[in-house]
Image 1 (cartoon, rainbow, N blue to C red):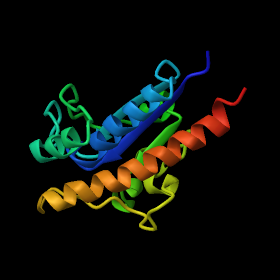
Image 2 (image 1 turned 60 degrees about the vertical axis):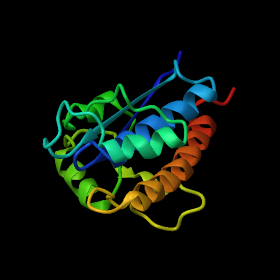
Image 3 (image 1 turned 30 degrees about the vertical axis):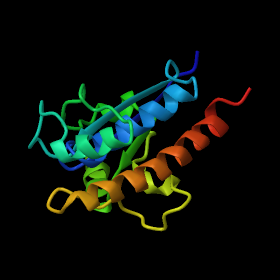
Image 4 (image 1 turned 180 degrees about the vertical axis):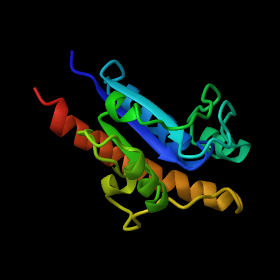
Length: 161
């Protein structure tokens, strides 16, 4: 059976990337592709390794039916470029870090997650950490859009009969 790996990356792995992981995981499960798509998230910095997602992130996600209670922060590493087929950054600053981290011989190229969005013209998912709850809701809106687009892309590219 073909397996595709997707890792979402932000700075600390406590707001945006775990949101993307939780949302995309639920979309993949509902599509019946859970055994074929491996999903993870990571941060470019080691600030929150081992920590659960931010409580505001979890609260906003839970209100929309997404569970993040089992997620814990980890730092992205060069080996992720061989473990995953899609390395997706939340913003251009983290994309630049990923491009520096990527092994020279890697066939996987990091991209912006919002490249897959259909209804948002923004290219970056803003970091909601220093703002109010509306920022976490905005992140969820963007992530849900891009997650749906990513799932459509994966189905068309990798899972057509």
